[in-house]
Every structure is written in structure tokens, then in C-alpha cells.
Image 1 (tube, one colour):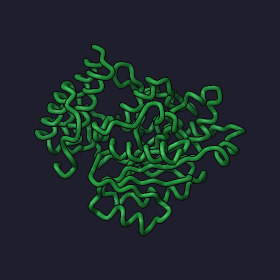
Image 2 (image 1 turned 135 degrees about the vertical axis):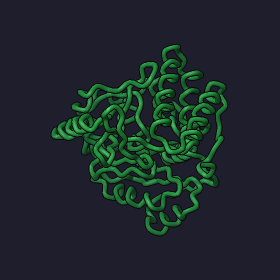
Image 3 (image 1 turned 60 degrees about the horizontal axis):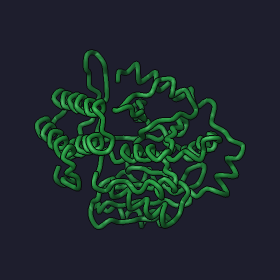
Length: 339
């Protein structure tokens, strides 16, 4: 995305928040009826997670529980949380189960055991604004005649440079929403990322838990597609915002345009290509979707050749992931320690 486009999107999101979503019943709903827990999946997050926990504790609409699933960190993440934040529920897994396993364990506890109405999900490097939860709940309440069908409500993830982590539509492939969508107080999407998304309890009860055999990458998108297949709506509330990072981004130039490029470790390229290919070949198959996957991964490979610092290893993992996805060879194949 070029810098001018980023600027336009940034102005759109700021303008759209001049009128906040309101519902006269929101105060009663939030204070008396709804139990909301946050759920963070962390791995070696000792240097990052404190900023997030502090932001969660300062929410203008308080949370009923703050939950962190520690994916067998070896940097003292659990000890830090237990010492500095005794009010936080820490679930330490015996081994790293990835985002899929961490979300599944956390949602089983928060939704099925503790029966929270909504579970607000995060990874460790996202920080909500002070009124993010308030705005999310107000947004859901404002969709009064469609409220029963809303299963996932997503905040808008913003990079520190001002660009958006865009929610997507699914039309036999990823489709960008129109710029006009960001002017709306509430709009409907198909796919949103884990960070800042709030899942209703009965979605977990009816749809099930996230896939543990995906390990990481496309876990959130597959879950959204599954929820949509069960008739649930995914709403985006642009006024509910979080600051979000994905790795170490850098600005690159292509055909005179500036865009952010993220160097992913080879194992991340594997899981993304594998889980995307599996989803399209086995779960939501169509000729158009398969053509999309081929084009999408070819563009990713071209970007790796141009900008990535570990070209050969990443390209090999994309090919391996695509093959394994088509053959439905899932499960944990690589861990971060293999990178």
C-alpha cells in the first residue's frame, strides 16, 4: 500500500469516530448483563505483555477476567504475570501449542467453563485503546435488530505507522472492503484477525473451538469462515481500535509505491500456505478459490524474492506447505525453536 493510500485510510478512520455508536440500553447491558473476559495467547512475551495487561486493566468498561495462556514460554512470562499481576488468570501449557492450541485452551476455559458472554482475544503484541471494549460492546448493541446473529465483533487493528490491518471479505478468495466501509460506524466482514476480536460464548458452544492442528496462521480466518457457515455475522467497529504489530516491519518500494513488508520466519510461511491450501482444497473448495490460492502464493513468493532476507528457506516452506495442505497433512510440523 502506498503512503498516500495509508494517509487516506487514516483520515477515514479518524473521521468515522467523530460520531460514536450509541444505544440507550448499552449502559445497562454492559454493567448488569454481560460478562466479558480477555484472552491473550503468549509465547516468550515477557518484554511485551505488560503493556497489554496495563491497557486491559485501564479499560473504561472493566473486564470481568483477564486470562493469559502461556505457550510454554522459557523467558519467565508466567512468573512475571504471577508476580506483577496477581489478578490475572495464567494458564501455562506444558508445550507450545501455537495460536490454535492456545486459543482452544483459553476459549474452553473462558466460554465453556467460566461461561463468560464474550471473550476478547489478543496475541501478545497488541494494545487496546482505553475505550476499545466500551466501543465494541456499544457497536454490538447498536445493531439492535441483528444482535442475535452477531457472533464475532472486531476492533480495528492499527499499525504504529498508521496503516490498517484490514478485515477481509471472502468471495472465493480474499477481497478488500471498499474504502467507504471505513466511514461506517459498523460494517460487516467475513474474516478478521485474532487481535482485538471478541467472540460470543454461544459461537464456541455451537461452532466448536479453533483448530489445534493448524498450530498457527489462518487459524482465525478458518474460525471466522466456520462461524459464518453457521449463520453468525462478523461485525467491525472502526471506533474500537488497538495498536498491533506483526514482527519487524520495514518500508519497501515497489513501482514507485511504498509499502510495509514483514520478514516472516520460514516456519510461518509454511503454516500460512499449508492452512490456506487445506482450507480451500478440503473445507471450502471451488475452482475460483483454488485459482486465488495459486495467484496469492505466487505473489507472496515474488515478494519474498524481492524483499526477504531468507529467500530460499522461505520459498521452500511455501512449496512444502502448499503440498501438505492439498494432501491434508496437518498437525505441528515445525516450532519457533526450529526457525
